[in-house]
Length: 397
Ligand code: ATP
Ligand code: MG
Image (cartoon, rainbow, N blue to C red; front, side, top):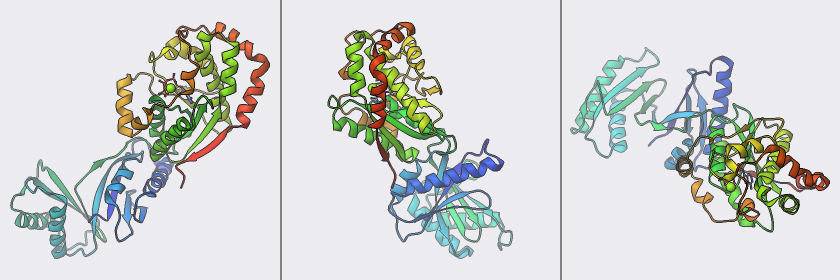
């Protein structure tokens, strides 16, 4: 029965020229989200800056459309709307009765009709329309009752060239539309944390590129596919994700051969950061994003984060999960739909070379000294890693 959606979005801080950038980005993302939904949709903006999704096909998958709209950042809430073309009061009485009949299974609720007229030329006042339609509902469904102060159901009737009827408001994803805040490079592993970090960054309107380090044959194609699948989940919110897959095997083997084993993890992490930084600047990203949170594992003590961070020279490293507990991260990953994939038990390139007792309080100077053992080989290895990079574009139709 619904043939359109009214999109509600936050307008704080988006005035003047920025408002158009915000609205255009939002409309683009809504179109992107609806591409995979059965049906034909048009996204429109009226003079008042209100954004509507109009259904253009005979039928469409309503539940899938709601689900898709819940994935669009910048949407505070949205309302399924019934459009009525015949604006005569007799027809509106009929329409409001069938609206209430279809939308509410249980009619035992209090309601209020809330009419607004765009043109004062309509032959009745808003209050007269409220009364006429309220009466129609009461007569058709005697279990309902009117409460104008604190109604359980607030039925909006907007009279324009056509009439909009709506009452249900579904919470959206919040945040800012993708594309309004630049681009970052996410270090995406197959774990629980980094996909959540990507989600949180994208939520603020940031486009996500991603890099994944694998170590064939120590890590399998299944492990790689898992990361592609996670990137797909992120793209449901963030739009297409350019996923750079870097072969890290030779660098890892060189570190294993030439550096103290209790420093393997931290040195490896520093090379991941350097490579990510290189790819980020080549792809116009303004920062790196990781899934680190203080104290979660040995490589995430403040000392380790200090040493890891020091490897990056030209851009900030964002760690949106820095203050979150593991359980909070798990809860969020369940909510955004990455958890199921993240817990698949495929090997991670870090776990294979991991030392029994990694240093938990590395010292930068000591680590830098160990890294000098790689001086003869590292430039060639980095060149080779860049040259063999594989790009997978995820979520692009
Ligand atoms: P996650 O669940 O995100 O894998 P984790 O708790 O396993 O995190 P670490 O393995 O210490 O933590 O990794 C810390 C961060 O480093 C990750 O959140 C991710 O951003 C990045 N990272 C780790 N391994 C990889 C990898 N193979 N490819 C890309 N990024 C990685
Ligand atoms: Mg990990």
